[in-house]
Image (cartoon, rainbow, N blue to C red; front, side, top):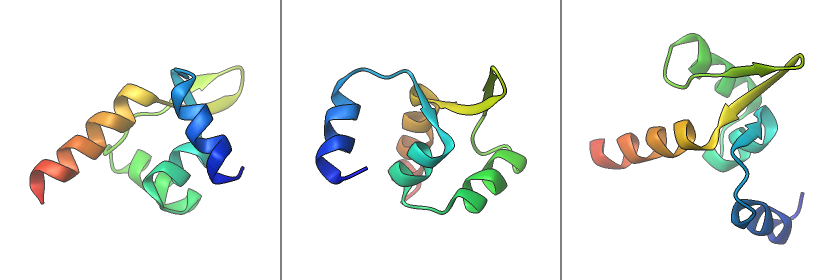
Amino acid sequence: MDPEEIIAHEKDGTLLLTVAEAARQLRVSRPTLYKMFRQGLLPKRRLLGRTLVARADLERLIASIAEAA
């Protein structure tokens, strides 16, 4: 997905992100994101066999990191 697609995707109001999309937003690898799930830093959702991340949860994590900095 190129940067323009990411920006358009963010503006479309998507509530759930794939693991790849969430990792891209955080600029971490997929294994790092799964590690964050295991550590309880970010909740994951399961839907029809897919692992997804709620945009609201991702935004809360980003806000908490920003506050801690």
